Length: 358
Image (cartoon, one colour):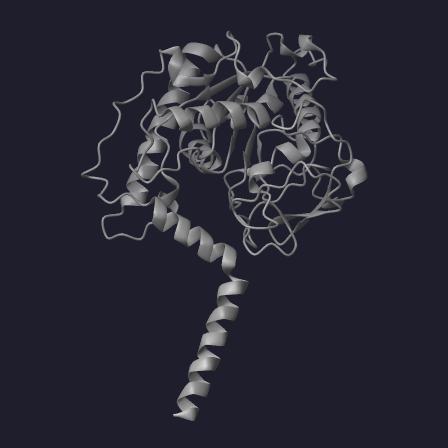
């Protein structure tokens, strides 16, 4: 009996240790289960296919005022003038209830999160270089990424979301773009779809030469021979990604083989930089002033490891302590704006067009 109790205590202790070490992944899996709809994808109800001729099917359009127009208070308002380049921005997951496999298009809270959080802290980084187009789409429930059902409910939900993204992109090209160079950008689920869009709709087509770069941030992107990883601040027709977290984070969105481009250097020969290279971080929920030298970063084993954080504005960690996923853009906001200007100017110069002036 005593031996049984000792063995039981040891096993219990090991389980507690494992539970602690993997607390963030276990929390994510538990969250995924909690968000899983109690019906199959086939039995679920869905909004009709979005009509992208309708302005309300876009979270951002350049000919109207929206949250993608915000700028830090030290920038001049004339940065919002019409630009010679477009960006097609795909927002991350903002639909978190477990009611459906895909977001109903008119779900108020999900759309408000996309506007108030994503358009402000992420898509607005592009408004100094580009005309911002950001579609609303029937995004997959977060549970889709954790689904292991025999019915492949999660994959079907992700495929439906991508169907909308691809439809919006075609509408953008045919009705808005007018032959201009463009950037593909996104975050998290948006980058997942952007990566697929890049490989299925752009590479190897006439559109490939017009794509300046793909900023597919916040998702583990694997490099392949079809797309170059951007190795310098002015390289074009290439792809960029990173996943930010501290070294001791229990859970990271990056994997050892994931693409990592350091947004403080944009240079594969300089994978590390101190906070002195940080031109300014901002989360508009905390105000409209940037925080210079907010954090340093280093690309290590497919992750962007943060060091020397100097700010208390970035303290909400829905994916566990040390995981800065929701701040992938915000922590490097001004560096992103600067790099966009440089990369767009390089592309326009190569194309024989007027260099973008900021």
